[in-house]
Amino acid sequence: MEVSSTPNFDAPIPGQSLTAELGGRPWQQPSKNTTVDEAIDYYMERMSSEEFMVQLADVLEAGVPVTTLANTIQMASVMDGIHTVDVGMLVLPMLMEMIMMIGDSAGIEYDKGLEDPNKQPIRNSLFAKLINKYEKKLNTVDLETVQEDKDDTDMDQQPKGLMARRTQ
Image 1 (spheres, rainbow, N blue to C red):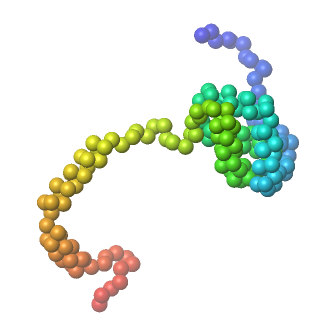
Image 2 (image 1 turned 30 degrees about the horizontal axis):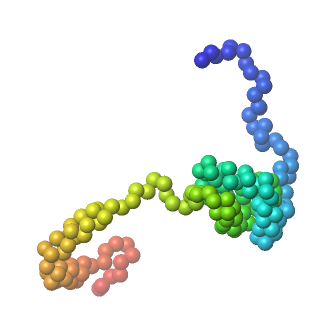
Image 3 (image 1 turned 90 degrees about the horizontal axis):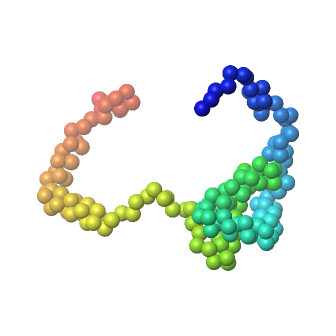
């Protein structure tokens, strides 16, 4: 890698992104759709176009999870000022259902994205081992002795500390 000794003056100035005029960004303006019903109508119209369905089918076939797609679509609409973040979160389940319906109608096997990919399935042998371990412990413990020990320790302990009540 070659390092240039001449300074690069084409780089952005530090803090330049903070100098935009207040209210000059779409997300700093009042949203176009203020209710969940308006946002759902917006998405239904947008997602029912043939071009959107073809692109969505391609992305689903590529293996992108439905949750990721729905979240990306609603966050892009928040940044464009279509609706607020809270309306987007309320619309998210409907977006997922619509995406899954498009995937089903196209005959695509898609990943919902609701399962944890790092979670290992619990083996039946592990359950059997744990059950045997606790059964052996239960068989060796005398429940009457444990109950008597518990009763003795409860009576011997007096409350201690700054906020404890005095018994005198």
